[in-house]
Amino acid sequence: MKEISENAIVRFKNLSKKFGDFYAVSNVNIEINNGEIVGFLGPNGAGKSTTMKMMAYLLKPTEGEIWIRVNGNLEKLSNHNKDYLLDNVGFLIENPFFYGNVSPRMILKYFAELKGYPIKKVNQRIEDVIDMFGLSDWIDKKIKTFSKGMRQKIGIASAIIHNPDIVVLDEPTTGLDPQARREVRDFILKLKKIGKTIFLSSHLLYEVSEVADRIAIINRGKIVAFDTLDNLEAKAKKSVIHIELLNHPEEQDLNNILDNLKEILTPLTGITKDLNWIKYNHDTKTFQIFFNGDPKNQFSILKTLLANNFEVIEFSVPKAGLLENLFIDLVSNSVSNPSDNGFNKIENKKSILMEE
Ligand SMILES: Nc1ncnc2c1ncn2[C@@H]1O[C@H](COP(=O)(O)OP(=O)(O)OP(=O)(O)O)[C@@H](O)[C@H]1O
Ligand SMILES: [Mg+2]
Image (cartoon, rainbow, N blue to C red; front, side, top):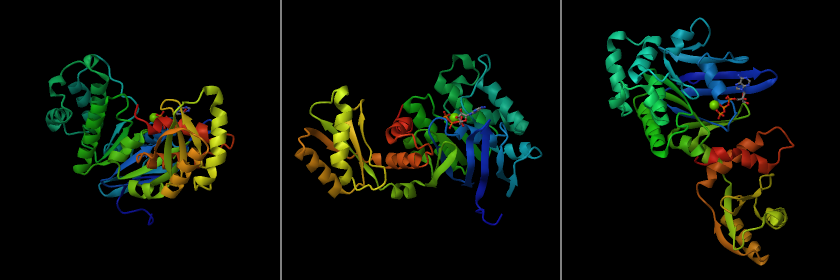
């Protein structure tokens, strides 16, 4: 046990889950330190919920172990100690379901009692938590009259009602409008401030990057990166140029244009691996070219485009592109199926990069 950081409050060790022959989670090793927010980022189907369900003892790992620290001791989660260990954890996994005829007070009371919260203090605790979410006026209203965002907040409230040290939130902002998302993010930061440890999944990079101290990126069940945002950014030396032409290409000409662009620009991207994608975004009507981020290469690309009579009306390098590219890079490098091509990979990952 020596290699484990003294600060680790949760540890996934060689954790795997197989459904039939398919590994939904494959050999995951993550340590979460006391008091930090770890973002768990991955596209749909990557294995985020499956990992969290194993932690919640809703699914049994095929292989590997989960360790959780309670009262200073890191213990391996098993049938014997699951209640004891999990009383110190709060979970929101996938979309919470509540019966329509119950009120937040009833729901929170149920969860608090289930998790062994002291009965004498429970009423005050419920009122405090509901107040944190600004839903005091709704505490005795029936859930069926609640909006999706309000239900989601009740879901988060029920995850923390027993005041656990560790909070596991699976896509807590899914389906929420931008303001409600902001509130949830602020709330997560508040939890950190009072010393909680948070394990938070999302398929939205920008969302996780706003709150997480470290980010674990999972793809097809495997962890492809686990580091601080700064370190990930330092690794993301690549960048992307967005190019718009005076005349938007006709669909039937697109492949020829892309082939032509690849031929003349690939040597200028400064990227030697097969990451020199050039693709066309139909929504923004821009070509996107991945390059090494060096302004000299950027200039050569523009010069070559003009020399080849491309009527460039926009040529920009969005700053936010950096981490997105790293993500694409990591996810595509981890793809084992050689028949996948780069463009599909980018399209598949679109959801992780863009605000819904
Ligand atoms: N009970 C199950 N039986 C069979 N396959 C399953 C089961 N649960 C999940 N899977 C598969 O495991 C993979 C991972 O699913 P999981 O729900 O963990 O992904 P996720 O990262 O949470 O995705 P999302 O962002 O869509 O919520 C998927 O391919 C899914 O189809
Ligand atoms: Mg999920």
